[in-house]
Length: 145
Image 1: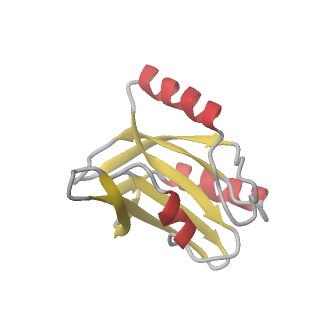
Image 2 (image 1 turned 120 degrees about the vertical axis):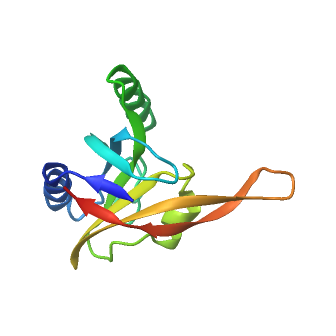
């Protein structure tokens, strides 16, 4: 489960509206629990540097590292990531699944059409040698607090 404060939910939705028709993205900070309840305390917007930002997102790598440093300095953990689907459902696309790299972290997706918010955890699967081979998204309960 992930707990998302109302103010952060609204900030992400507003940013998605302002960024449309392109996807927006960012990092969620707070208290991370791989199998329990993660609590979001902050959100850090980042530039979408994907080649086609209308249908994909890629967090600017330099900004991502700077955000990770800020999280550490504030005593927060990486809870997960967020992005928008301006014209699609609030669930992961095939591309989202193909590019997911943070096992057990939350991926919050905001949709503008239809207007909804969903959260998913990436569950990596190990191959026979123990290396991450692939994985899948599992829907998680999202509580707005």
